[in-house]
Amino acid sequence: MGRADHTVELLLDAAAELRSFHACVLPVSPQNLAWARTALAAAAGVLRTPVLVLARDLKAAAVDDLYESGVCDFIRAPLCVEELRVRLERVVSLNRYPVPHLSSPAQIVAEDSYRYSAVKQNGAVLDQTDLINTDVMYESILDHSGAEIEAFAVASATRCATGGKVSFHMAKGKLIERFERAYLKASLVRHEGNIAMAARSAQKHRRAFWALIKKHQIDPNFYRHGYYPKHPQDG
Image 1 (cartoon, rainbow, N blue to C red):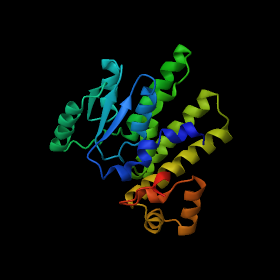
Image 2: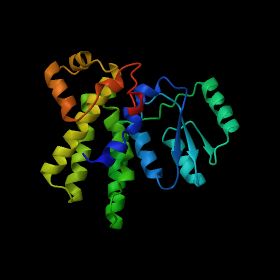
Image 3: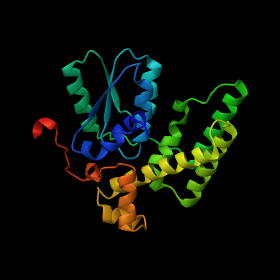
């Protein structure tokens, strides 16, 4: 998986560490708007810390879209410290921890099918930003039943097959890779980095579970309560 794929999981990876903070200020501009939307979607259902957007040169439609992605408030750049203080106090007092609305698998299947039909009729290419609900489904994988996951898998496989751009082997490998990575991270978040408990919950041997963690280069320390990685200057 390339570096770009890892960056959209930045908020998801930092979810456990961010629990110690009242809020997270996320700078967003037109240049990184698509990334911000995808990163927020990837962290949906896991990130409990309120997210405030520091908006630079964003139009009203973009800000509204960020609200739909789960942010609780925004402030305009250049930053006004007094405004930031007031908005932070408001967020904390209202206890507005963002738990973005997660579509049901049936809704995700319907929305993906509708989007695919629309772009196919128009001869357009399905953009990655249109698949945010797919990312949400992966990152909330532990909250769904086997039947729901099966329905989602059928929809994903159908989209890959009818798209005609990805081989069976590549599509299968990518789906399995994303599922494994999302499942491992969600399980580690739920059990605060305890590998033994996560493996037991997954009904998988601890060594096999650990092998998958190493395969996907996941650091379980990030999901342990009170863990803060040292910076180089800290020694």
